[in-house]
Length: 584
Image 1 (cartoon, rainbow, N blue to C red):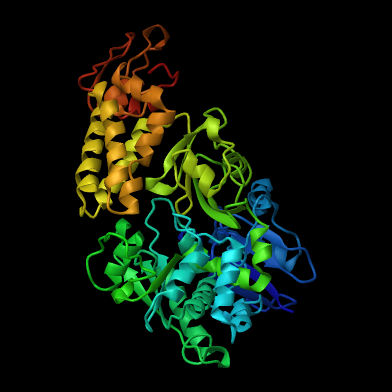
Image 2 (cartoon, helix red, strand yellow):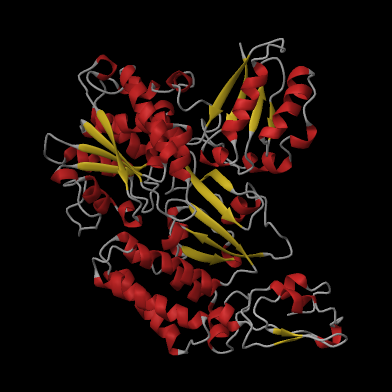
């Protein structure tokens, strides 16, 4: 058995020069100085943002993992480790790496960072497509019942029972039916679907094949945003390989079932994550939602019954068929089964992709795989869960269980799995404004509540953060949030006010400080900040005067500096330059 050098080369790894790292290893290994052969395998990203991550796998020795590897580190690893058998200690993965993976249960992500995603044989060697072979000749209703028994719910946001959706599509009249994989993933900071497609594309294809067989579909689409070129490249190659092996096309697994998959590249519209807008985009129309019913399972793509699921949902399917519904339903909570993948970002030590069992608390996620706060002195303040349409939850809700019912009860949503952790230096009013600005920009503009209501809410938040807030603004934001939620046409519009409503609920004092005191407690909203020199502590060095680009600082030798608040542009250059930190 050959020894292997695994190099994490998804989008994250490539941005850190994973390709150059691989080239450096290849050049030295081909020199012929080693006493054994090594295969260089470029995998997808493993999840932890400590790229480039490199593993030396020797079947006769313990596996060694290196983090933060650069092309310049390769000669040292080659000389010390591969030639002389001495691991390079300064690059070894430490406790942060171990803690990041210790609290996880990787089902969907089990192959990410472990296999070559562009080699179908690597996937087959780990049980790939065995679930497709298992269902060959099986009664489709038995497969649907297995998915229902598993308790799998859609991982795209709403958490609708997958088996029930499959059943609706199966029973819908019509000979022509479709399967769609929603890989649009437009949430800021979300990269779950991208990483799965880059690291384990065959798992998604296998899930689509099983779903197609169960509902009676002969054609499928993967709708992926064009901003994911590596994911698209790898899924295209995976489709081609699956066709060559007989897992796609006519007579799959020697039976009478045929299924083909096409890729549709989206233009990056956030609203196309909504399933009816996505369907419109595939059909060549502008991506705008339409009222439901009829639901896509009844009348979807080209008015034919269509089953739509996101990447993570479909990647779970093969495991359920392989290991059984009872196994899957044993993981998680009573109503939320299995695991959930989160894109963990923000002010935590370990950022990246995390997969944990449903029922894990927010605290366990942040202080387990997340490693706790990046700066302990800043402390935890809030977590935005569910993407731009999610909610901001305070420290008092850290022990909330991660499941659909518990998260919804807080006023947030599970969403597709984005989680942004914020510390004490974060202004929650500004956070609400930031996410609302995104949804206003991405609104399709079809319905009045979203087009006008969200825009007016954003204008009010702008006024509050600029020191022009009035007490009646709070009542307006509450009323408009309720109106938009109840009247918007689609799910994206109805959840867009969540960042505002949850920050009003849990961080009400910050709104009062902005409106009544005209202060931003976190010193973020620039219109509410002024700079001054603490004169009794000033050492009269003049460094603030020297760096001020606006000429707002006046100073003479042996005299205190002063800041003209009318000229000050609040660039903070004076704060950075002051050697004794007396500018506040």
